[in-house]
Amino acid sequence: MNKQRRWYHYLWLWSIIYFSLGLVNILFAWLGLISFCLPLILAIGGGNKLFCNRYCDRGQLLRVMGSQAGLSMRREMPEWMKGRAFRYGFMVFFFAMFFNIIYVSWLVASGIQGLNEAVTVLWSLQLPWSWSYSSGIEPWVAQFAFGLYSLMLTSEIIAIAAMLIYKPRSWCVFCPMGTLTQTICRARYVPTIK
Amino acid sequence: MGKLSPRHAVVDNNICVACGSCADICPMGAMEIVSGVFARPVEERCVGCGRCARECPASAIRVEVRS
Image (cartoon, rainbow over all chains, first blue to last red; front, side):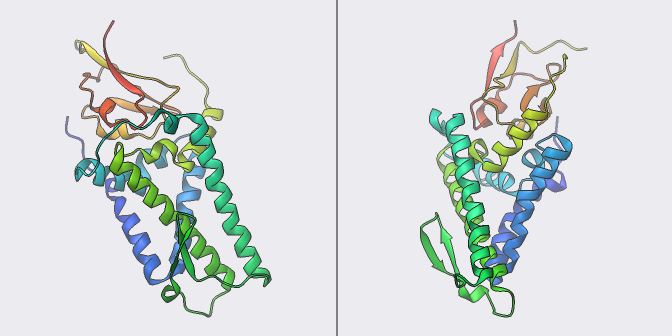
């Protein structure tokens, strides 16, 4: 049976477009909120993980790079990385970082803290990114964009590293959005006898 | 209904993260994601080729001889 290629099989292009746009103008980083909101809308409203299954640009990119381009070493992930403690622990950590971005943006909006025109990779390495920001907009809007872009870039690096070492979509095992939406779906799930 | 393949995929629902990579790779379209909770093979379509098991990042799928 030949599987027909559909439009969503090309959503991996969105990952490349997103990070490219962030190089030009950091305000495009706000588009990353789509990857936060859409999975939740589908999970809460539809009780499914359709975003992970079809529309996740990162999942598609990992498939293209890992399976089609053959870049994955396809090793088995360690058991602890597949365990619930790590999955839920990483989810809590990830969302703590997300709420920290909102908090810092609020500090900037309040005038307590100045705008930091840098992208922070892996929560430690600060990369100067001032060329992608031109003044004239509210500093907190730019601060949130820098923060969100940092979070998206960091998680992309971790996802690609996991793809290279383990199986192509290893990131999906501990993806915070995937863990959260599965938890929501599990809470909604009513088993049916088939 | 045709004759079932001697081997088939079996999913451990407790390990499955419902990412859909098995459904994506299955040449027979034999994997469905049940309510975003776990993957389930459609027995009539599954030929036990094992591509889903090789692709599964959580190692939640194994191929077994049908009982």
